[in-house]
Picture 1: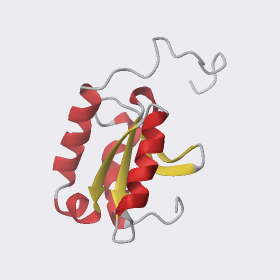
Picture 2: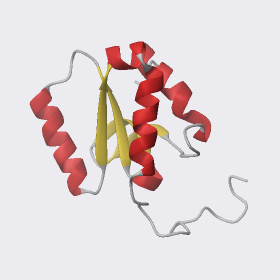
Picture 3: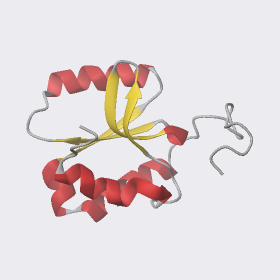
Picture 4: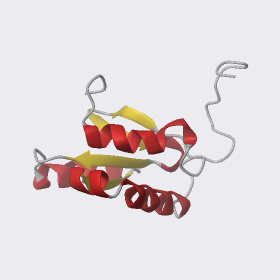
Length: 118
């Protein structure tokens, strides 16, 4: 899926990548346990899912509950919402991020090795 994202995923990623949305960093196709989520903001433990027509509501509900038990919150948007109003979707994500507590105390408990990533 990472090599062939859907058009709604590409469109949303353009607004999330590079810490563009309020300075929050997102990962695409992040692995959490046995799940792969569309987008993850690790600092706020926020998952963003873009759902097409193949999603099963009951399975999504169980998945979201399992992830919530691990401390993650999930926002879901339909493909049509992203395609018609990506700015509105991004604003809702930003509003949620700004109202969410930090996942870790500052500084991050596992900083990268000195100089790596700089």
